[in-house]
Length: 284
Ligand SMILES: [Zn+2]
Image (cartoon, rainbow, N blue to C red; front, side, top):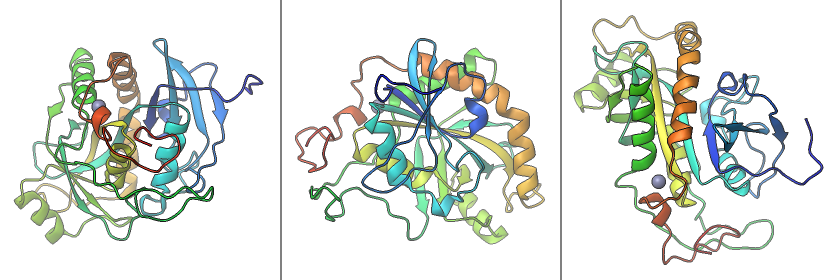
């Protein structure tokens, strides 16, 4: 479906697989160019419970973009350019504790960055194509996830009878390979909960634009260091994800419905009093 009434707007955003919006009616496909290049795919704008939502397939609809090659800046910029202010980021992760087996839904409250070489800021002093130069900005990441978004995700999961794990640390690795047993044991020994490949810099870039970001981590496997784990295979991850996609979609939609209409969270104030130098970004 195309539109001749200009580019559709959205207030909420989801970065996740195409299975999450496949069932929506009247989805408008919107191609967005950004000063940072092209996002993973077009944005798919539709309506969930009366809210306008833009879905972005994180790895592209054909799943052709691996975690370390995702243009995270273009993805976040594209969403905010449509008007999105709150983002939910469902993702597949490995469990680092025996009790976090496949099918566990964990809503993390912290992350640890173990990626390497990813561009992780909008505020790098490099001029944009239109000549605008971003200021030097240091945002707070003490609490990287939106408290209101986390509450919405947790309530939505409980409501659907899928008891979620409230809080925990998501360690983000560079990928695309999985962890060695030694790395995995080290992550567990540090008290970290789950391991994934995309949570960073997604959450950071959202905060840098003053957006709310909430991670919803679906455990698809026990990571290599967990005693009962067999070591992870890609096939296993895909299988478990496919088995859970229906209930993940239903929790996600329920969470979208519960997101506040007016924001007054730490994320919404992240840029208060700052000049960003970025066109269209609050604080500019
Ligand atoms: Zn927020």
